[in-house]
Length: 439
Ligand SMILES: [Zn+2]
Image (tube, rainbow, N blue to C red; front, side):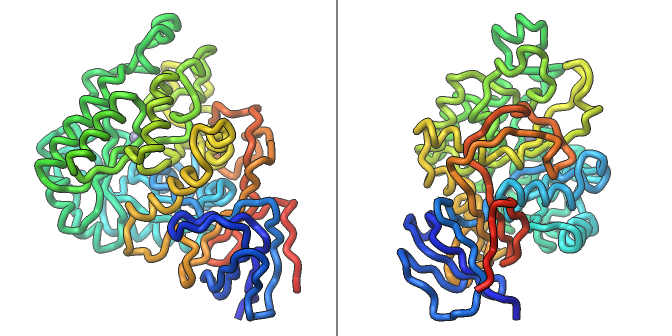
């Protein structure tokens, strides 16, 4: 029997149970075994102590959207490095997109992810299966087979589902498994060759723009198809004011839609591209202040359900080139909390809202098949994130556990840092300043 761990004196925030109080938490045999407010201590005396005074203690973060690059692009990331990056970022569950090579469009590929993450990963990895065979957008994948081996959603992310007919079929068929269809909404006819947000800055830089309409047209189509079929639609990386409005109206109508926003779309504008920083090249592109305002409003009124990283690691060589040639993507697992805490410190979102969007809400989208995620309820898996909301630190990409050092936050000071991440009762990450005392 492993020794229990007593997390003492932290500010416990668990939106799933409406808990927001200074208190203590006990972990036994990989599960949450006891929770007490104030100075209450558990009856069981034999435990190690982690002093969490001044720190936030919350359910482990869940990322519904990341790219682990394995199999096929192991020079960019692997399950081993990606899950370590996740742990450093406070994530205990990450859902990996199937745009690997080969893509995750069959049972064997999903089994590979599951066994690799069990043997080499340090946090939980939940796979997402392809919508179409080979991500070619032509023919549905064997969705039933994929569902039977535990995918939590279907997506051809990286690319949109171009055929409305295929999207209709996918939404229709997915109802049998009650799993969401995640679409990367992009009207390709409007984005061909696009490099950044379309506007004054793209004109000034001489870069081809990607208009907001490219995203909004695709979202409007998907919402119409979700309404037609009654299927569950999840919209990836929402980036524009118009998209937020479309989703808000669809929710009012009762359409089954959920939506996510990334940390970078909430915190960075298109101005980051001035100077041609390829690390600010992302798809959908960084937008405007007005879009950010609408995205934050969408988070606050629950039009946008969750925050997901869209962690997209690339090698240095990939990004060390002309802007036009660089691939899209930001390595974001390790800066997510620090950058998002900026919105809490400025009063734009509350700490509880932030934690809800990283824990309870993504757990609701995943559903019950993995049981008790995103909560500190007694008996739930002991997935716990402990962070200092006020600690300032400088982003040094060379210190990332991720192989992807591609971040527009390099050299920036962020306020808010993960101090420890506990996955299934084990420490997946611990800052050197966190000491565990044997009792
Ligand atoms: Zn995408």
